[in-house]
Length: 143
Length: 143
DNA sequence: ATGTATGCAAAACATTTGCACCTGG
DNA sequence: CCAGGTGCAAATGTTTTGCATACAT
Image (cartoon, rainbow over the protein chains, first blue to last red):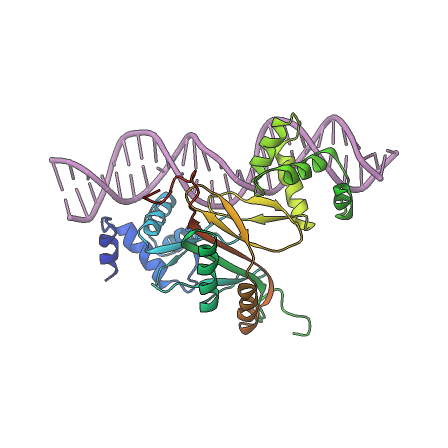
């Protein structure tokens, strides 16, 4: 049960924390901004303040429960940490986000860091592209 | 002469633009925030507004003269585009930034994008680590 | 009980914009 | 001359914080 995750993080199991975790689990788009989470909560009739959403997401991040990404556009997005690392490819036109893992890229990063005397702590790889989805505003010419 | 770069970008060669370009060229740290550029200008006695710095940097980015990066921490940094693409490895402790290129990583990104039907437009790869510099607050235990 | 968490409103930032004035070509 | 550029101040959008109240354990 996910309440254990909250407790294991050294946090009290409060209603806002449980609800926010549920939003992150239940949402179709895995990458949500604080504002997104807040809006989903309102839609479900939950009376939780935006400040609390920010505080909880920050705590969840510190606890390793969620990851925070700085995609372009002045705001951060959060996603549930499902244990498996992955990178992201995002469509510049429609904002669609897909995840991927490439072991070769992972390997090379370790080499690069080692060559420069860095202890590697993590990384952020985002490929910006244009997808071919029918609903993407940047659909290629001939359709 | 760099004034040609400004002109080729379709922009008038104004004092603020020239000065900002000089700051970007002359600074020891290649990665500067808008605020950083503004501060350097003040130090040199230039009377240029922060809003102008933002506007000019944005125009330079659109023109391909500079690149904008979203390192962690709520603000963007800009660096002069010297023609050669590279990625970054930053020290989480002291903020030091080094640049690197790895062709294997570049190749694999193209493959990943192609496999998913994305036209690749660019990417952002930042490795977070801990460097071993003597002035780094996170120097390893035995020194 | 009691130390944490929360809600609200205000503050703190980074960045953008409106507008009257200035300037490069 | 005049379109485009600039400075300033105000607006914006995101995230953080202070503080009195409410809640989990």
